[in-house]
Image (tube, rainbow, N blue to C red):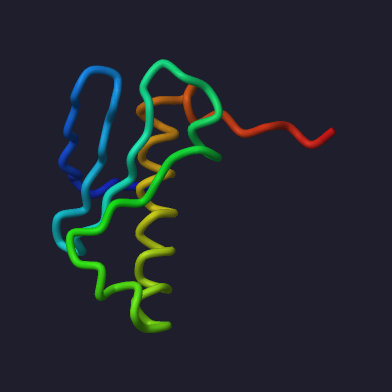
Length: 83
């Protein structure tokens, strides 16, 4: 699967992966587990949250950003196995 080029911002252990085309980012802490479940969403334009179509766009983008992050930061984005 080919991954899009995303912009990565770092400040200390904080990381934000940006899809600049959509203005959607995924924020997490590098070096800390469970980030698949604890990461946050960043938006350049909050208007994306004002429609069902915008919410769907953000959700799909976050899924792609999470897939990218899980390849680049496997420890942080490790899935919890089913018990």
